[in-house]
Length: 150
Image 1 (cartoon, rainbow, N blue to C red):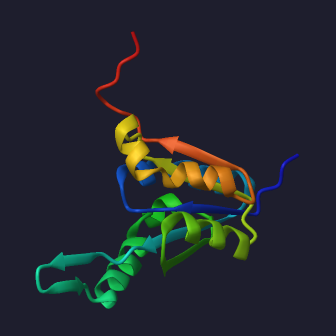
Image 2: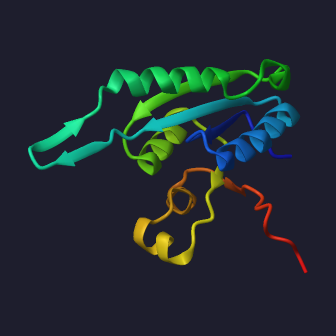
C-alpha cells in the first residue's frame, strides 16, 4: 500500500488552486497525511519612464498570510493537520525546493488550462513541476463550465 504522510498544495488563490486544494484535502483525510499549503510571492516591478517601482513586500506577505489562514474553512479541515507557509521567489523553483525540504510524498496542484499560444510564451508552472518534482504530482484542472461533452 502507498503511504502518503505529507501532501503539498501550492496555491495562487485561483479557482484552479481551490479545485486542487479540495482534492488534496480528501487525500490528506484518506491517508491521515499532513497538508502543506504553499504560496509563492512574486514581487512585481512596474516600469515607468523615470525608473522602476517595487511594491512593499510587507503588503504581499500580509495578504498571503491572511489568505492562507482562510483558504480552507475550519469545518472542511476536520482532523487534517495543516501547515501554511509563503515564500518569495519563482513559483516552480520554490515549489520544488519546498517539496524536497519538507520530504513531500505527493504534490497536488491546479492548472489554468491556458491556450497553446500563451503556453508557448509563458510556459507552465505545473508542467515544470511535473517534469522536475522529487515525488508524484497530481494536476487538477478547474472544470470549465462552458465545455460540454458531446
